[in-house]
Image (cartoon, rainbow, N blue to C red):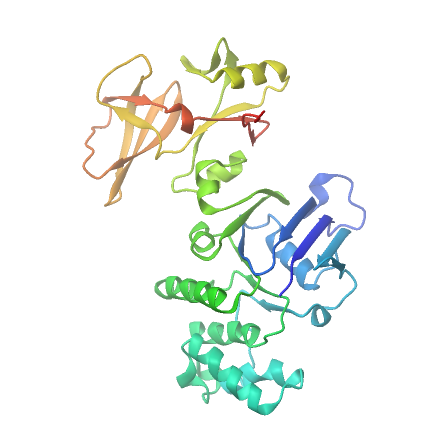
Length: 367
C-alpha cells in the first residue's frame, strides 16, 4: 500500500484549454494517506472518474504530478504502478472458473502455486464465494461477478492501492448494503489503501473514514461524514449532503446581520465585522432542516412562517414552510402535526446558522 499525493494536478481533454471551464479537473493538491478508506463523492461529470484514472495511470494528467510514497509516477504504466482497479461493470473472464479468475493476477506475477491456492481460498471466504470457486464465471449472477472482480483486486498482497469506480451500480439494491459492509470489513482486515468513487452519499458514508467531495473539477471539502454534515465548507456540500439538503438562502447585509425579504437574521460580532471588510455581494446563509426548530411559543428570536407542505416519511416528517419569500425545509419527528396554510414559528440556533461568502464557509479565526 502507498500514500498517494496529487500535486498541482489539473487535467483537460481539450488540447489548448483557454480557461477554467475547459478543465475536467482544476488545479488541486490532495493526499490519500497510506492504509486509509476514502470516498470520492460528487455528481456525474464533476471529475471523479478522471481523477481515479489519473491515479491508476489510465489517463496522463495535463499538468502536475502523481506521487506514490513521494516518488513521481506520471510516466509509469498502470501495471508498474501496482494499482488494482474495480470498475462500474464486472471485468472478469467468462470462460474461466471463479478460481482461475482470482488466481490469474497471481500467476502473472509468478507466485508459487501453493501460495496462490491459499490466497485464493482466503479471498473467496472473505467475499463468501468459496462455494463458487469451480463454477464458470459466465454462469454467475451480476453481484457474484462483481464480487469476483473485487476479489481480483484484493487477491494481490503487494498492491499500492485499490480503486473502486462506482462498483455497486449493477448490484441489486437489497445487496448493496451487505457488499458495502463487506468492503469495510475487508479494509479493516487487510489495511489496504482504498479509494471509492460514488455519487451516492450513503455509499460514501458507510464505506469511508474520510470523504472528498468534488464539484466542478475541484475537491471542495475533505472530511469525515460528520464534518460534511455539520460544517459544510461549500454551499454545494450543504446542498449535496443530507436528505433533504441544507437550506441555503441568498441574503443582503444589514445593521447587525443579514436579511432576506422582511426577515432580519442577527449574526455574531465577528461575522458582522468580517462582512464589513468584504466587497463581494455573494453572501448566503445555510442551515440544515434538522437544526431548524419549530417553537411552541412566540419570542424575539422566532419567525412566523406559513406551512406549505408536510411530507410524512414514516419515522419523521419534512415540513416545507415559507419565510420571507423563501421556502425552508424543516425536519420534525413523526408525532408532529401541522395543517397546510397554518402558521409555525421558526427559530435558528446560532451554532447551526452558517455564513457563506463566495460559496465558501466563513469560520472564526482562532487567535
